[in-house]
Length: 375
Image (cartoon, rainbow, N blue to C red; front, side):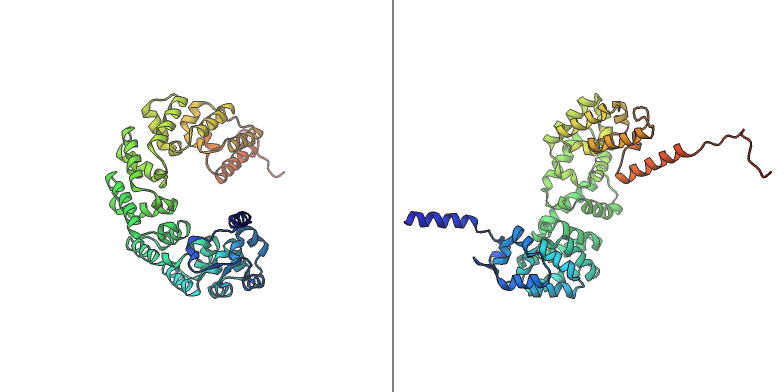
């Protein structure tokens, strides 16, 4: 009998959802739903079934502050549909203490222009706003640090929204990574007067660069230097990679470069020129590159064309084949023309395609043909 009871308890424990660590201290898990929470969410037109399916454990928590959270959002200018949307995608918000949320609101307003901007951020990144109170001190210190760098407020809000982990940790860790980036910029010959703009651009393009170990940046730059890239070329690569240089590692780059060089059949110097034009070759795995080279070559594109416009390798095989098919319908032979026409974003291609179509539809002017005049 005791064994059966123990087994039943074990099975029941396996089905109890785990409460996130940042909410365990202030919330109690019950076996039944908190009816006050459920009713308050119904009144706010929140899709309860969706909440039950995705994060049902929230409905079992006590205490909950559904009305208070909704009131806070409403006072900042959020409409009823926006409030309902926020509470559906991030129902944990109702477990946040109102006093802590007031402090969080004041913290965010130190970098946001107005409440409308803050509501827009909460709507897109609710988890970044509804954080544990234990992170507030780190957030405050990190905001002060980035403000001391004279970074644009828009950049700071973007960092807080898209990479909240970087603001929840001690400021010293961010200081170390920023100093490493600044040092690399200086050592590679970057202009001191442009460093703030360079840093802002890099952080806005890849906010997660702050979460990477500084040593990884140094190792990758050293590897590329050993491959023959000059300091000026390394600075250019560092800028074009948009901070993703920290996502790389020497082993993967070594394999990718060896595969690309063997496939293209070029010298080390030629490969460096190709990499400078298309840095994506550094982080695509061999399987991806093999598929894209094969897709281009099988579509009638030659290797010299690829070498001349290597950024075409950033496009998926599906996109390349679609664009080539569209051009073929209009009588454009990609095997003899420039790859620039299929290169770039969807908008770039549509513009190039539109110009090509216009040129083909426009009648040629014949200078010897008689002009039509009035009789």
